[in-house]
Length: 315
Image 1 (cartoon, one colour):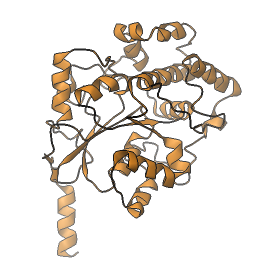
Image 2 (cartoon, one colour):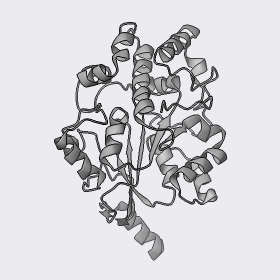
Image 3 (cartoon, rainbow, N blue to C red):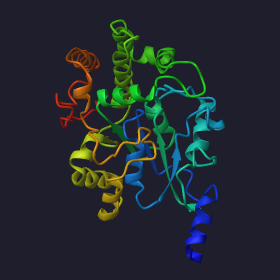
């Protein structure tokens, strides 16, 4: 083995935490429900390793600075909570370092910073305000494809705890007060039915950003568009970010699965767009559509599971 290869092996085996030389304001926020493709999207955006990626920094079980936040936290954009705002500012400024948050970073120095999280949908308007209005990319994937993935992985309960995601969401009085539609629809949900339970949560995770984000300021990135029309979607995404990109390098990332591909599927061969059609019964699909319609979210996907082009943002 040559000296160069030896040094490379030694370097790759050494654990280190990067130096964050960026400004206090974060460069970009990327959010989405778990299993929607946020890690993959983050890899695409960060194809040139320009960003220090803060991986799920609002997970209390992994990050001390996030311990004041619930596992899935709702916050109205106008909420004044200086304690949480101070903790969020520390996180957003990159003043945290640990193996969880920095798990994918490989440079010694960074001047730009991306927050990538799957539990911030319900406080994204508040977080955006605390962060001084950075670009926000909101990742979306068809609800039944998300349900399928959650079911295979046994998701639905908090990390390092016994509370279900459902109970954590429904325990927050401020959320139910701001969105009374949730209390109305939950009466018609069979929470013991896994499909209904997760579709209901999917709707909440997408309803709040649809109201608290703005179509002229924020970007809705559909997983399916990255699969079926990557050239156009990538071009639109980077134009929104006002960031030039190397098409050849981005295409390489597009063809690779993310580090959170827990099922170890061959990403380029498996049907990750609408395999749900073969997995769920007609009655389950019909019930899903009823729940989506109740939340007013039935117009963003067509019957084949592809985005219709209708904006999810209400304002």
